[in-house]
Length: 180
Ligand code: 5GP
Image (cartoon, rainbow, N blue to C red; front, side, top):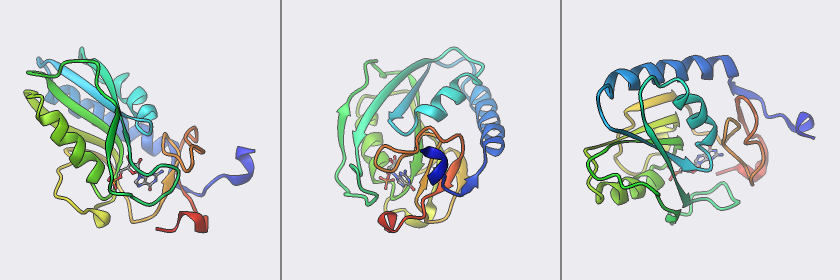
């Protein structure tokens, strides 16, 4: 039962909702009049993406990309590959990549390179969570929900071995198995 193993709250539902609303307003202002493509990085970004796009007051195309990163473990393998590519052609479009969390930055760095090669008009990142302490590459997160310390979090789309994604808040996974 999910009830029995509820991770302690780091960021509650109300805070997430308020922050997503602010980000959506900022994005709506910045991309007004532009051809916007919003790219969700599967699977972790699916909850944030669904909440965010419904608050963005602009026409936009939505697409998804899936990458392999941690597998069922919590440690970064440093090996990234695209396992589901975009359906849309992003050349000449303003692309906003929506990611659940930026940790070492290796996953996003790889993705950004791959997308930049397709010559979008612009390419920016919106991430729910950012762990600046863990960063291994230089990477700008233009729209950031929350900066968090170097802990392993789950919920609001983020998993541990495919569990916890449906939690409505961001919680800290306390199990030893998640030690990094
Ligand atoms: P990076 O390449 O930046 O180290 O890691 C990016 C990916 O690792 C994220 O998209 C996410 O899937 C996973 N990840 C990094 N930190 C966490 C965390 O604290 N919790 C969860 N559930 N996944 C994480």
